[in-house]
Image 1 (cartoon, rainbow, N blue to C red):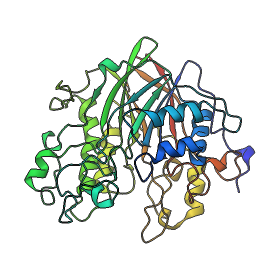
Image 2 (spheres, rainbow, N blue to C red; image 1 turned 90 degrees about the horizontal axis):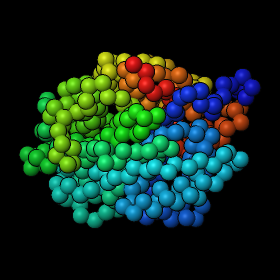
Image 3 (cartoon, rainbow, N blue to C red; image 1 turned 120 degrees about the vertical axis):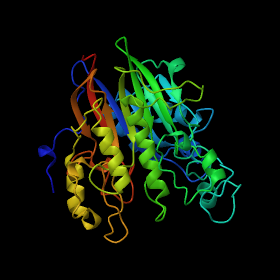
Image 4 (cartoon, rainbow, N blue to C red; image 1 turned 45 degrees about the vertical axis):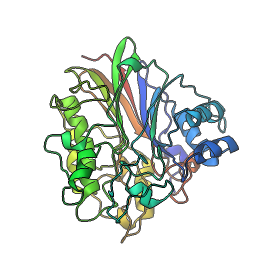
Length: 395
């Protein structure tokens, strides 16, 4: 067992003059519409652990993946007031006065038999319904996302790409052997959405590019989810790399990010640069190697390394460094995928200087190990928060 005193601080103070930007798949999804709101009202132990992680890490800008969407924003208001706004085990309260919330494709009915089970399922609340939605979800807004910020958001300049059609991406890896022509004509690229939300930091606009691509699994030899994951990640490579002229947002505005614009790509991208699905691996490596990002300084943790050794099974023989992994999945040697690096904070090279980065994954013996635990049952989330301290304005 690792002694607590020998472990680095998993919640270090923010570097001087830096802004802490983080992503966290918080696992605040629930099986039915309204369940998250009900849980948050009743006092939810898992949500309290998620809140404590956020309070102790204290990011200035935070993307939460897998936070169920409701149009009125009731769930995020409850979470801010009753969880982040209340000290969890002595952690300092934290407030995010600026919120960006927008609809998700998850659980949104497509009108097509996308899972090819012979029927279009109209009634929310089943796997069959979720399989026919534009993004898998058993009700509209399941597995959605929300952006929290201490800094003002330029909401009037925000762009969302929820309705961008997959077929409109040049060279798209469309699984035409699975979906019929009518489905492909309507099929949206984003399984949730892609967002470009400018955050105003020190007089500079930093574009938060947020998404949560579909897992490249839960399909068959047609690899429809692997192909979609690849193209959802490729979207950002094109958007920041000067090859996004084909892109349009929901207002009809066209094109990608202007050359030289400052950005950070955030989210659970469901792709590991070393292990897992081949197409996902190809897409994430392309993004990490973009000249605009050139981002190979992967965050690390002792907890990730310790978990891989302790859990064994599917973790044995992986190519990627376990200290860089950010998700704790099933370890069964036959059916599990093991732990993977899936969560990213990828800054633009031109205008952001990374000072420090990390993964909130304490090892056994650490005083905050109970926030993540041994894996199962899930204490807070099956993902770990990834953060990066950056200084804005580097030329």
